[in-house]
Image 1 (tube, rainbow, N blue to C red):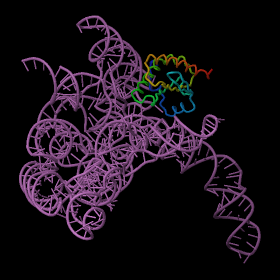
Image 2: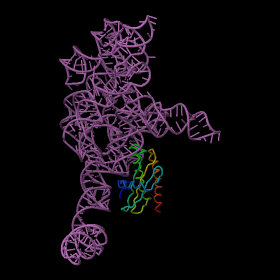
Image 3: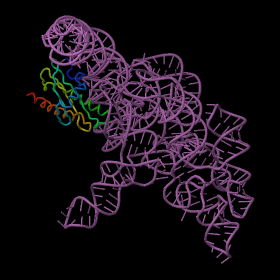
Image 4: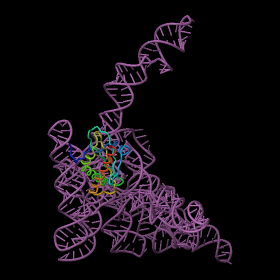
Length: 135
RNA sequence: AAAGCAGUUCAGUUUGUCGCCUCUUUAUAAAAAAGGGGAGGAAAGUCCGGGCAGCAUAGAACAACAUGCUUCCUAACGGGAAGGGACUAUGCCGGAAACAGCAUAGUUACAGAAAGUGUCGCAGAAAAUAACCGCCUGCUCCCCCGCAGGUAAGGGUGAAAAUGUUGGGUAAGAGCCAACGCUUAAGUAUGGCAACAUAUUUAUGGGACAAACCUCAUGUGCUGAAAGGCCAAAUAUGUUAUCCUCUGAAAACUGUUCGUUUAAGUUUGCUUCGCAUCAGGAUAAUGGGUAGGCUGAUAGAGUUUGGUUGCAAAACCAUUCCCAGAUAAAUGACAAACAAUUGUCUUUAGAUAAUUACAGAACCCGGCUUAUCGAACUGCUUUUUUU
RNA sequence: CGCUAGAUGGCCAAGUUGGUAAGGCAUCUCCCCCAUAAGGAGAAAAUACGCCAGUUCAAAACUGGCUCUAGCGA
């Protein structure tokens, strides 16, 4: 087994086609300050695949590449440290894979502690939203 | 010592926890373990130049674009270094003035306006073949007025008014003439690789604008890693080979055989049979080629240190090191300590708070431009204090 | 990564041999109307034509640099 708090390349969503599908029609979206989510559940060949993520920061809001990188890195750390709990709560069926996009809403870089609180709330809302159509 | 300007270098450090990318070794079915490495001076803007790659390409000219004092540096450049000229400021000095000279500092896209074309608003008589007023001569005439001509010495303006001053000269004037200056071109001599400088002779007399058109000289083939090369799933499809199905030859077309008809031949029609062909399917091989992957792609006009040559940019020699290689895109997050700066408080050493810039590689180099909290060093200038 | 356009009153915008910025909508004042709208007459507004330099007597325009906006190439 891999380490618990890891976030390797396999958990990133790298295919351009998948990302297009996520945004155009087939994905559902949801907002909870300071984040918004686009997600989509598809069939998979693996038995218990890990969710695949994309982090999104608008170029309009952060014009400098340094700021965008910093926000993305903070978001990734938030997800990485919260992942075990998130996977427990998620409890997907077998052969199902989650594609998730985490977008950053505010126009400024918030402090880490504030982001943490917001992220935990947002994840709860997200899990409820995912489970609704299944049940 | 402080302030300012210019240049060069650096541009937070250490520890802990968790995590990312990559290379090597061990192990190999996979996971894993150990060790090494992991943003910049601008990685930015994309303003130039080159490498590299593909395509094109007899030669020459035109067009288009770029550059524009000289010499040097360089792979190359629109970059840099040194020098020359011009301009500006300050000081000194010569002169009646125009202006010139010297020193220091700064600026400079700085070929050609005496090749040609064009533009120069308003004002002003006139803006490049300048006669409105004025001055002078002649004619008319008592005079004024008027007509013809000469004249750039004087005159509202303007950014700019036709080479400055003095003297001669003249009807009045004028580079018309002379002297002293200025501008340009050509020749000669000296110095310099050269730009150019100085001296001298002859000619000339010039408005500004070429970041207006243009002329001259020099250079440039086009495209750009989304270039180019290789491998290649699924699905669809092209080609080839073999086999099977349908007996379906209904329609259209072609050849052969047989029969009928006809004296024979030709043509047409009908019937039967078989092959090719068409339709569908299976297997195998193969082609282009999509998703995707590999390569291009990280050892180079390289880094460190020293020496030699050169005023310098830079070059050469020796030595040393291997120093990111991601690809929806890694190089991080959190905590603590220290350091620096600033503020506040007590007080001269602590406490506390805040801040620690600009900014993130995307094929690679050389420059330029722009952003940048702060620190160190070097040089110059100014002010103050001490000797 | 490689390219291309644009920026002019509050809004839409014209403006090229370089000579002080046309027009429309909106705004303000007056007339018309019992009143409003429409209509008619008149007026103001561009600090500094995105910003900073340069060329020129003079720059919205010409030249260089910067900022922002929009678009193109898979």
